[in-house]
Length: 295
Length: 93
Ligand SMILES: Cc1ncc(C[n+]2csc(CCOP(=O)(O)OP(=O)(O)O)c2C)c(N)n1
Ligand code: SF4
Ligand code: SF4
Ligand code: SF4
Ligand SMILES: [Mg+2]
Image (tube, rainbow over all chains, first blue to last red; front, side, top):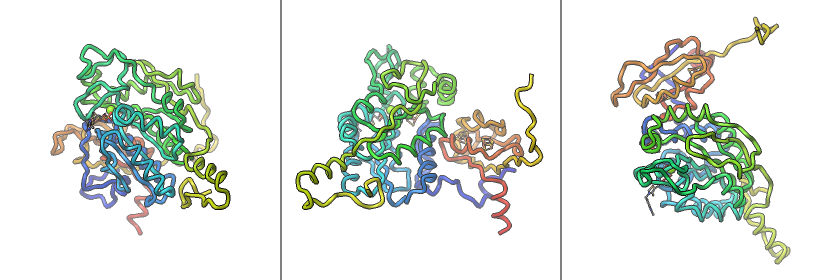
């Protein structure tokens, strides 16, 4: 049975989580960002969270548009500053779930220092990084995630700079939850989002996603569907893999899975514990509410 | 060689059925839904929407098992599937 939209009474299940006045979105045909947004929306729904207590924060870039499309408390920060804004929001409103959703350039290049220090301090936020291996929005410049030999508009003969391995960067900086999936692994990605959002501490999910217009085109890899097929044929699921062993090379196997899931006191735990030690009963524990810091 | 047996409760298993909804005007013709539908329900049509994309059409609508994969993978929120029973319930209530 099939109904066309003109006759249908129901609305798309995503509509309650999207700012419909802004849809259709700006993303190109076969771009993977929209698919990743669906995974987050489904994760939030399945977690049955009070959506008034969830905030999405993005920086600048194609991926950075996500904060503007989701019907949640959201903030579209300046370039690279999604994480510091999210950190501030978390400290001011520890009862909220704060989710950063941004691109590889935004989070790891201009925002790289915020990323490592917020992971180091185990701040209780979730960071989702759509890694399309490129600065897409500004015309496809080389990023700190561009694989060696891949072409970009500023590496027309192939990139010769070593890229970051994001799960390794997150894990070695102190993240307590680290996973990598592709936009094709939609159900596992949704599960990873649920686990990351439920995790107490700095959780990080890298999503390898197609950028058709720049990454695929400049490298003559076809379109986003061709990249999805590539992920299908070349992803290796290896839970618990050592992040040191999962570098991404140009058009070769991609290791995906959950790599880190550990317990560690969060930034606010440490703040409270230290002040309690020093000031004893005079100190009032900070951070109640219905978020992670309830206990 | 046969790797599976016929389940003993074959007559009791109910295969879920889905009712597909395609929002043609929102579609950008990426083909994700067509490529990954496990039942081969969809194909891109020859029809154009007002932006010039070819939205999908269900060629085997009765085989849809409401797995939601098309809905999950669609980057444009342009296709979704409801459980056929749920739809009927909505109609009668
Ligand atoms: C301070 C500052 N520097 C540079 C820019 C230009 N700029 C906008 S988006 C962007 C890169 C975005 O890359 P990424 O985060 O990977 O997002 P994508 O578009 O790939 O999703 C850059 C360099 C800017 N907006 N502000
Ligand atoms: S330029 Fe690339 S990342 Fe940006 S919307 Fe287009 S396909 Fe997506
Ligand atoms: S719900 Fe599943 S079976 Fe039905 S059309 Fe979508 S992908 Fe195919
Ligand atoms: S996945 Fe969505 S945008 Fe892509 S062809 Fe199917 S309905 Fe259209
Ligand atoms: Mg990018």
